[in-house]
Image (cartoon, rainbow, N blue to C red; front, side):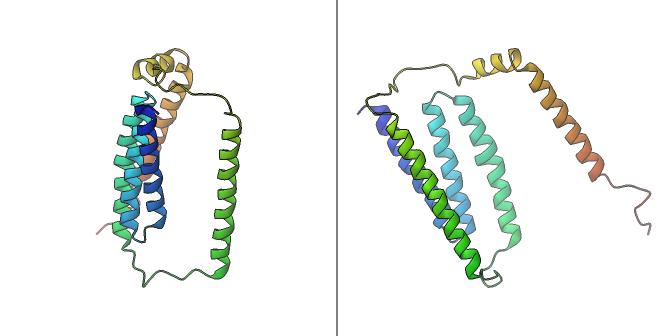
Length: 176
């Protein structure tokens, strides 16, 4: 076993441990903090796959912006176990059934993955330039320039729509 495989397995175990911490934590704040650690370890996996751009975007967008919003929402909601309604047996039963179905899907996916790899070895030491920012930008602005421009026009129209909807109308505002 070489160093890349050891790092991969350590990161994988850490990622799974943090993901289980998200689910098993009783405190919502601790759950969000475990989710942040999970995002950082996933970014480390991206770096190992030579996809530095995805790693940085994952850290900035998910571990940064989205998790700060989650923490603000949790702190503003003021969750107490006293005010939380008790879930009835039917909802708990549906949760157990859906969790079991998800477990079966995971087991089937893992089984199909390992049955196709018999006798094959994967060389992790070969470096590829697929995930580098230069190659991503070249592909984005050469092959996918039209969908990129359409997406930018859609985002611009969504921002203008949000400003128009959020703007208060002076004619409808009550006068004092």
